[in-house]
Length: 339
Image (cartoon, one colour):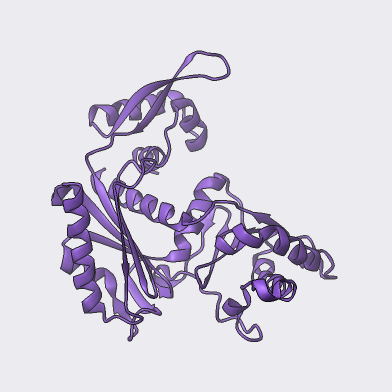
C-alpha cells in the first residue's frame, strides 16, 4: 500500500489529525509523522490548529494545500450537463459551476466539442492555468467500463461502444476518467463506511436507478471495470419505472416502489449472503420514511432465513451527492498523477 497516496486521499476530502489517520491506516504514529512531514515539505499538505471542544487544548489538523491543482467534473444526464471546477482540496466549495441544456441525443464528436468549450469556460471564469487542471471526470448513465473508458450504451448517445475516454482526452488534452453516475455515490458510501463490511446499495434519482455493492470493503465491478447494472432485472413493467411515487396515487405507488425494492433486494443481497442494504438518493430523501418500513416488513415476513435477516439502512445525504463523489474521484486521480 502506498501510504502517502492514502494520506492525500483522506486529506483532500476532509481535514484530519495524525492520530486519526494512524487509526484509519493501521500504522504507527511515528510513521504517519514521517510521511506527513515529507508531504508538508513537498508543499502538498499544510497544518493548522483548532481548539479541542472537549478539553480546550489546540489540536493539530492536516489538510491538502489548496490553489495548486484543479479538476473539472461533468455530470451528464439526458437533456442536461452539469459541470464544476474544483480544487484538489475537495472540502472547499466548487470554484465555478455551469449548467447546460442538451438535446435528447448527441453524437460523441459533438459532445467532445461541447466539453472542450465547457472546460475553457470554467478555466477562464477563475483564471486557472490550463496546466493546473490535472484531470477531467465525466459521469453518465448506462453501461460504463471505468478502466477502459468505453461507454457500451448510454441514453444520451445514438450509438454504442463509444471510447469516450480517448475521445475527450484527445479533444481537451486533459487526463480523463469516465464513470457511471451511481458509482460516484457508491464510492462515497464506501469512504463513509470506513469498515470492511459487505452491503448492496440502491440509489434512485433523476429518472434512473443506481445500484452498487461492496464485498468485505471492496466495491464490486465487472470486466474492464464495468459498473453493475440492475435495470435489466425482469420486474413487471420495468424495475426502474417502478421506483416512482405519484402524489395523485400515493398509497399505491408507495407500495409499488416498496415491492420493487423488495424484489431487487431478493435478487442481489442473498447471492453473497449480505445482510445490509443501503438506500439513498432523491427518492428516499422525499419518501424514505414511508417506503422503507413497507419493504422491511416484506423482508421480515419472508419465510426464507436468507431474506428475513436482511435489514435496510437509509443513508441520508441530501441532493446532488453524486457530484461530491465525482469531485473526490477526480482528486484521487490527481493524487495518482502527483505522487
